[in-house]
Amino acid sequence: MEVRSESEVHVRSEKVLPLQGQMMQRTRLKVLFIRVCSSILIWTCLVQLIAVWELYNPRWFSGFTGYTTKMSVHVEGTLPSPLPLLPPRNYTNNGFLQVSCNGGLNQMRAAICDMVTVARLLNLTLVVPELDKTSFWADPSNFDDIFDVRHFIDSLRDEVRIIKRLPKRFSRRYGYQPLEMPPVSWSNEKYYLQQILPLFSKHQVIHFNRTDTRLANNGIPLELQKLRCRVNFQALKFTPDIEALGEKLVRMLQERGPFVALHLRYEMDMLAFSGCTHGCTEEEAEELKRLRYAFPWWREKEIVSEEKRSQGLCPLTPEEAALILQALGFDKDIQIYIASGDIYGGERRLASLRAVFPKIVKKDMLLEPGELQHFQNHSSQMAALDFIVSTASNVFVPTYDGNMAKVVEGHRRYLGLKKTIQLDRKRLVELLDLHQNGTLTWDEFTATVRQSHEGRMGQLARRRVIADKPKEEDYFYANPQECLCESKTCDDLFGPDNSTAVQ
Image 1 (tube, helix red, strand yellow):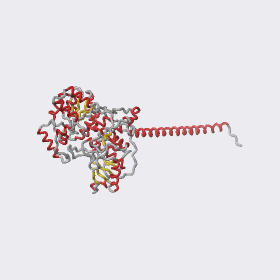
Image 2 (tube, rainbow, N blue to C red):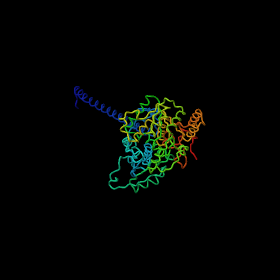
Image 3 (tube, rainbow, N blue to C red):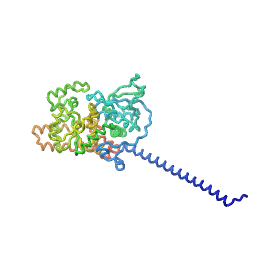
Image 4 (cartoon, rainbow, N blue to C red):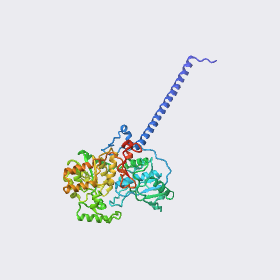
């Protein structure tokens, strides 16, 4: 039997100890590595879950993420910072959907929200929408001149696949002819599933050549309604240039104090289209009539202006707006930002309004000529600036319930029920005439105006539903109630008995 000396044993032990130390060190490193990887994985999953939940329930996290009711980021009224990029949704593509939007900026904005929702419902690939270049405004702007197209595509990638252009094999240059059609107005998801989706089995590309109000206000599944909101409030972000200039306008106004955004829709196209000539000279009325006849898609030609005005179907004149703002109690020193294009009749028609409210401002009064030069002759880009200012204003007052009035109202509700005065023009015209003919004193006039508008200040309310009369009921984008509450019926917000269905 071999006997080792103490010196040999000591040497052997000295060799073993370092090996054991190295093994223990490696074990610790492995444990540490596993813990770090696990922590990263858990936090990544948590962030993704929060992002997905917040996209559909943003107010649930208001106390944890700083998501305030006003959503202040750079200036009051702007929308929150982009959320983390989500993984793309995998689905079998049923075809390609092309859309050509018609109308002004806000009509097209609502249409884009609807078309994204339709593409998601039918599992289609959506081509970035084309904007209207042939309307009265003749604005040559493309989608990426107004909206951040990369953000639009990326922010919706977990819902629908969006591409900038069709694959070459479906290009008209290569002789491919898509099916062109306008979908039926105010349609629900059954129409698209039962009548539109089967068409894609024969036609790989369908082109919707009209997109205004092609999706119903009500009776749409909750997840689709929330998607409409997600597109509107998060995906449709203006280009950096537009956002920067819009925010500059807001800052300049806010530095001077509170301000009202007055959407004074007394513009040539509106007056010609509606036939409303109250307050115009005979020459102006004739000019507007000729313009109406010059545009074939303005179908109604012979219009009795005073009849439409008495029905509340005309925008208020600048002179009428001045009286109403006074009656509502606005101080003469309040700033009033004119959120519209050129007023028909120019400064002559603004004289009465300016006499009562001298602090009237417009874009060209606040900005240097060079700052607006890029936006000249681009009505939709100018309207985008007005949109930013209007959503951020202390009070928003539209003098006509057109698309901008409705879409801005909906944004202000979403941003924390910010005050929007919804003028009852039919009632106001009656009161204005009674006051001006001496039947109502000023005190009686102001008291009645205020009393009749107590419930028309943008308060929380259910959307009014009128069966089979979608044009007469409340517009989804003016009151997107499904995006303000958590439950399917919104009883958590309004209570179970607060119904506004009209039989």
